[in-house]
Image (tube, rainbow, N blue to C red; front, side):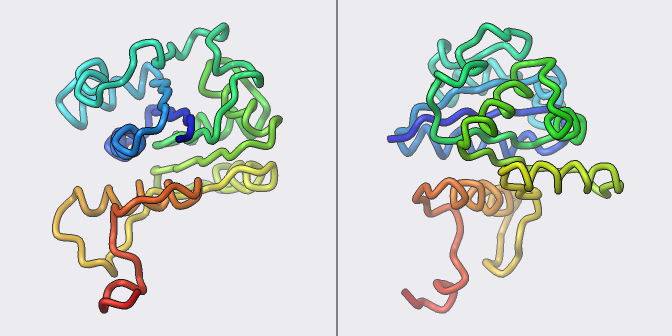
Amino acid sequence: MGKYLVCITGASGSVYGLRVIRALTEAGHDVHVIVSDWGGRVIKEETGSTFDLWAHTLRLDPRNIFQNNDLFAPAASGSFRLDGTIIVPCSMNTAGAIAGGVSMNLIQRAALVSLKESRPLVLAPRETPLSLVDLRNLVKLAEAGASILPCSPAFYHSPQNIDDLVDFVAGKILDLLHIEHNLFKRWNNLNGEK
């Protein structure tokens, strides 16, 4: 099994991050998590529950939950081997800081470590519309080796509810990390093809 770091920042769309965590833990992967202060507030606003309650529900190992202000946490070092880092949702503030090489908190530092170590880094922005500054920062990050996956669900799989839309984005994130899943029907499976 793999070892992954999932970071949740203060952009709307915390359910995407929570779903990725759940999919990884259910598949038996070693999941580590960082939630920014604003990310925690957005989780509470959007889901009605605190991240602590979600962590309990998702059965996260408390030793694998890092504080965003702790630059001594294992995720701050390249010697902390990971198979991938995911920032979902990724605020434009976070993307801009990483694009500028700034590491004022653990999420930013962990992302920069992924880039310097040439490890998979997936940034999933949810904000819209994007300014020219945002677009240039995302291009800069893609050029540096990050994968940019906007939280834009598709509709070809005939979603029946919000969970289906969230699962689509979470599944696309897992696809980028080459993790098997069955979170959505693939295009070639819509008509029963294999």
